[in-house]
Image 1 (cartoon, helix red, strand yellow):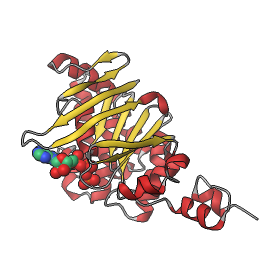
Image 2 (tube, rainbow, N blue to C red):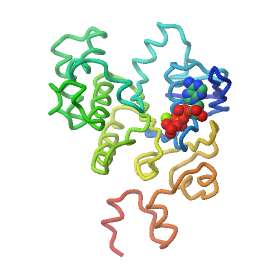
Image 3 (cartoon, helix red, strand yellow):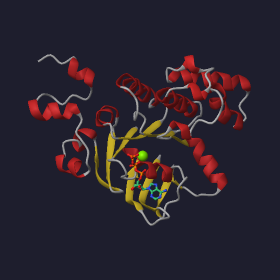
Image 4 (cartoon, rainbow, N blue to C red):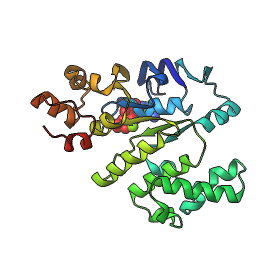
Length: 263
Ligand SMILES: Nc1ncnc2c1ncn2[C@@H]1O[C@H](COP(=O)(O)OP(=O)(O)OP(=O)(O)O)[C@@H](O)[C@H]1O
Ligand SMILES: [Mg+2]
């Protein structure tokens, strides 16, 4: 379980990017971090990974404070993984198979186990057809999926996903929603996004960030009716909330619920 307490972070040029952030991983299995461009979502994720070092406050995993020595970070990152906003940051090897296999080889898995894991993880992101492709032939959306597969091949407990649907077309976005709904069965997911429809549908609990500070948190249905908080954070409401507020219909949790509703 992840707990972030009074986390503050400042970049070298003096930019204070995170101020007193408190996040409790016990609040839900899928946690959303929402905020406009430049509010600190990626900075927060880099802090959680220990890539950036907090100025003050703490990050705890299973009751243990994150420390920054190589050995502790290596152990920690076996449990806590990230899929970066930009898939280029994640993919290094010449083809899809080798890219996913690389981390597993480092962990001394047998070639037989590696093959199984590469196939399984690509299958989970509906991308088995890409297994032999050179990375540089992949489209942006395909790279996003392969970078997720690379993480799913490892036995993590928490997966941070930074903007998993940015740059994806509507069908790929739907597909990504299904992928995340499947991933949450075997690990906790913490997801940052400006896609309010996605966040509303898949998250159990959300945190609103504005200028590096949490300005609201709670269940999506409670946070997304707080018009003032959202306006100040420069965020829109999910369309299902807009329909609920305008037509006084029941509050649907998903597009499917809405479509299947007969008055
Ligand atoms: N290396 C850096 N040095 C100084 N300031 C930085 C650095 N990287 C990011 N920032 C600043 O920190 C703030 C938070 O940036 P961050 O990338 O975390 O935002 P974000 O919420 O992820 O935005 P987006 O939605 O566009 O991905 C921004 O004001 C940004 O300009
Ligand atoms: Mg970002």
